[in-house]
Structure formats: structure tokens, C-alpha cells
Image (cartoon, rainbow, N blue to C red):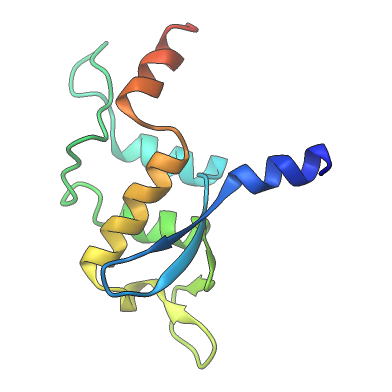
Length: 120
């Protein structure tokens, strides 16, 4: 296996959501990472961002943007079509599960965020 193949392999994961359907997701792109970080500023200066107990009310507009960017198969769209499912057709629970799986796959757990802070 080449380096490129090995690297690409760790970018993706197949996730089964509560509705029973399977989706192939990828780690956050820089665009999606920026969207998430802007929506989750620290509560106080110096206080770490936590994704462990997400208030999805704060992320209601962010989740669809991240899913459009990071769900690889089936490819989602803003608007439904014959061949594409709209991100807004997914039920709330499936959206939340996909979002949290993307966050975890991307390494944005409390433990990993703490490691990142140590590099500053």
C-alpha cells in the first residue's frame, strides 16, 4: 500500500445511523473545521472548547453545513433531486449521530484537544 493510499484510508469511515442506513464520512475539511470552530467559541477566554456535551441548539445551522462537506456517500445536497438526498431530509437524530461521528473521526475529543493545546 502506498503512502497516499494509507493516508486516504484513515480519512474515511462508514457509519450506520439509527434509521439503519449507512453513510461514508470523512474527517473535517478545513472549511468544515472553520465552521465548527466559529460556532463553538470558548465560553470564557482560556476555557477549552468541549464537544462532549454539545448543545445542538447552538449547532442547528452548523450541522447541515458540516454534513454537506463531510458525508461522502451517499453524497448529500442542499436541495433534493432524483439522485441526491437533501441534508434537510435526514432526521434530527441521524444528523446528530453523523455530526458527532465526524467530530470523533477528526480527533476533536477532549483528550485530543488537550494534546493540541500543549503544542502552543
